[in-house]
Length: 390
Image (cartoon, rainbow, N blue to C red; front, side):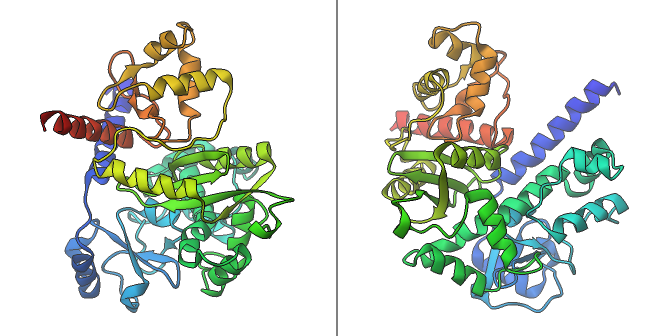
């Protein structure tokens, strides 16, 4: 088979698997709990379980001692579990696919020794490790790349504090962090300080609290659960800066840029714009909303804002080509620049960058993944047609 044809087939297979994962509905909580308690092997591959007290996720058949029901979370994929701050169980090995290659094992051990550390290509080269070999072996063994695995562990640690803060929302930032740490959420780290370090690296120094907001620019973050996986929302009184899937490409880099640009720290917390985002995103997935009335913070260049305004004008259930957007903003030759601006959105669904496709009608780049893009388009066509028939 020619190399380009082989690549196309691989992409189609991967897309098919992603679509299955995105469209698959988990069994009921009760059914998963019964299967977990019975170690029912027929549920292998259907769901994963996470133990909140140890931050470890397992297969349904894991032989480890069963935790209390209130301490169990259920996940559709290992990716979801890692971004929620869990690490793979060493007994049932939920991410294993046969014997782990020595190179994969070596790099996993490096990541687990300090999940907050970035291991770049130049770091691999300094160890005489070929990055392309690493990419292939991780993809073959885990189904995701080495960088995706490392990013999930790194961001999962930081995002865990945002997720956990919803349980202590009435407390100060300092007290929230103390509570999280006191819950022994140190799985995968040498000490609980690993979580503090991961949070500080991504969101800024965590010593900042709303009490000293007069001297520190504070932005608030919230974890939003959705049918397509969790989203992260970041806002302050200027509006919403970020509202995107936690595992979308580039989110970590965007948060770092956002903090630097506004000299800000991001802390878990309550804010009226975050409340509005949670309500309206929920209404969207319930098929009750096609347009949003959220207060979005002013950001981006004049060109990017023009592109985003054009995206907002695309009706739900319809699509436009990148060339169409370029013509709409009066710059018909700026197709590539339009594509870049589309990718720099970081306010997914609300500014509907998923409604932009290739001129030939094919799906093209989407930070949240092409499977999510297809799901959103199908969902909007479905809800729009239902509304028209009523």
